[in-house]
Amino acid sequence: MIQFSNFPSWLTPEIIPGFPLRWYGLMYIIAFSLTYILFIYQVKRSELSLSQDDAVSLFLWTILGLLIGARIFAAVIYDPSGYYLRHPWLIFWPFRNGQFTGLQGMSYHGGVVGAIAGGYLYSRKNKLNFFQIADMVVAGIPLGYTFGRLGNFINGELWGRVTEKPWGIVFPYAPRFSTSLEWVRETAARIGMNFEGVGAVNLPRHPSQLYEAAFEGIFLWLFLWFVIRKRKKFHGSIISFYLIGYGVVRFFIEYFREPDAELGFIIALGKETEPTALLLSPWNFSMGQLLCLLMILGGVVLYFLTKQAAAKKPVSKHNRSTSGKQQYGGKTGGKTPATARKPPVRSGKKKKKRK
Image (tube, rainbow, N blue to C red; front, side):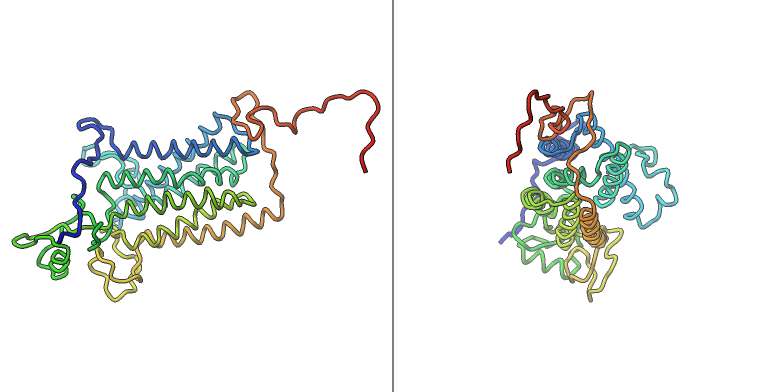
């Protein structure tokens, strides 16, 4: 009995064959757009006065920081050969051996660091409350992130470990395993895959991209949007729970995702470490898991620091105005806040106050 599925043949990276527009790029455009829409939705219902120009500029700074951070982390941390450390000027060079290759490799964790840096610099430059804005941005990020992982799935990349589960998928670009290995023959036999007379077989993998889209995306967004956002008591709480929540979910999903072939396990405490395509021990940790632990630690520390700061200094409900620009406004709908209007001049005697 066959207990796996082949990758859908009708799914191709290109939206229209022959044209450079790809599903992966389109998914990221949708992700950024959706995050922006959710951010503006919150701004309109908050006390934050932010113009349309400011909102666009904020996102441009954040996205630029994200791309820079994601690329640097991928080139430095995920390249054990040290090639980019010896040639740092090539990190953002999209050509290799005279051919256009684009910027191959982006790190999510590096993107987080870069996005935070970009948002912080913009907030400081324009005298905005960074944590207030960060809370609004990250509350919508996971839902947009869902589409990024769907783009990975359509590309047939970032596949998971070998599985015998019936929802396992044979990804066309995944490496094949030699049938001379006993574990390969046994796995193929159990899932009903023919390997007789074949030198190597492509075994089914966990669709870890879909796991991430569901849990790091939809599940985390529901948690932040409908639970944490509704109970927010101080600025910085949502971004703290985002760092903790994403780190926890991603840490466990990494057990179903094959580690990078160049790195393998960074910490190997289990008795068996090979092949990395199999989950042999929960005590073998990938680079992604170590970065997730740092992410969780950072979220916990940030939560207590921002909570302590909020206890010392009450949150101000009034922010700078942006007169002369189109206002998204706060609860005033972009009009002059009621607190800024002059009270009408009353004639006659003053009324006595009620006791």
